[in-house]
Length: 459
Image 1 (cartoon, rainbow, N blue to C red):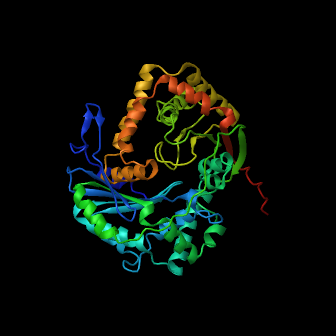
Image 2: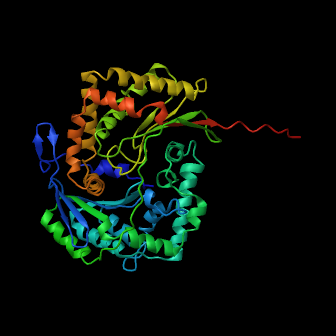
Image 3: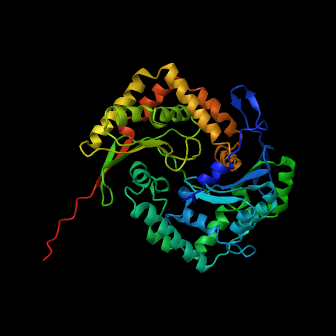
């Protein structure tokens, strides 16, 4: 879903600068200025003059949960179409303008949003804003572009799902098992049948309904002045009319009350794997931050309880990954039902039942005894450090601000997350472990290698 850009991010990451002022000796705070244009577009600016570069993020409030029924994978398909040109800037212009000026761009689709991000020298700000406004107005809606990108997305599915050991069963399989509402449970990558049945009228309607200025946030971080950015936003986006946005359905779901398990075979797998998911508290609820900290304690790194207990200690697992809102996001960027997910490869002489029993034991220890002060402090310090590191590069900083404004209603939520983490206590972890991480709220999939085909005699 995302074109690879890890190396670019590492190269463009900048030292935390004085422009991000410290509220106290341990708290780094981003400067945030925000303005909403008459057409409903919200513009967020974070000034940092430590380098003559910028990061830009445009986030639209549409993702897999809002794609039409019978059009699974459509939000992802549409993300690809946004790079296929417009009547004013034909296919290839967007990439050439940004990369030609020393910049980089990307896009991704998630459950609750689609984001488009760029980083470049500050001299490229106006061309980037013109390009983003141009594709917000309209696209090159052609049969050729649609067919081309249908095939591109289908090839992604072949590479990442059908022809890859384990595919993404820890995402789409768990969602299908855990959630009852179609918006939450369907395959966001999409079926070939649904992708092929998408028509040009569907594409035009999707852009009209969800890609208007009043359904978007644009954030700019870097070597800019807020007043200048607001003026440029008005110049390039102010003339785009607001559009009616379809009213979404209620996607909320209660916790599950009965465990569900499923067994699958995998012709490409060499060793068995498991995935387990538990429905999580709502974003922004009193249990949200404690669950985020508990996820870090259990599976956040190699010092985590489940790695030490099941990989190193019991030696049942070869690896373990997961987290809150994993694998398509982090603990803070969702706006509908999500799960705490675990995924790991287990040894052939072990069963998934034994793995889940061991997981339950580790969780029960937290629910009964909590966690000692030293361990809790270590976990929270690691979380806060990782969080700040994730705001280092201007492109990631802009993206975090745009998503916070879209999902939380306030870009300054970015500055509040460290405080939410630090406020979590041992009793909070006991409470959420006992409430959410219980077998009745769990779904699990056992993914085992398919039996070998019988040998045939050759004469």
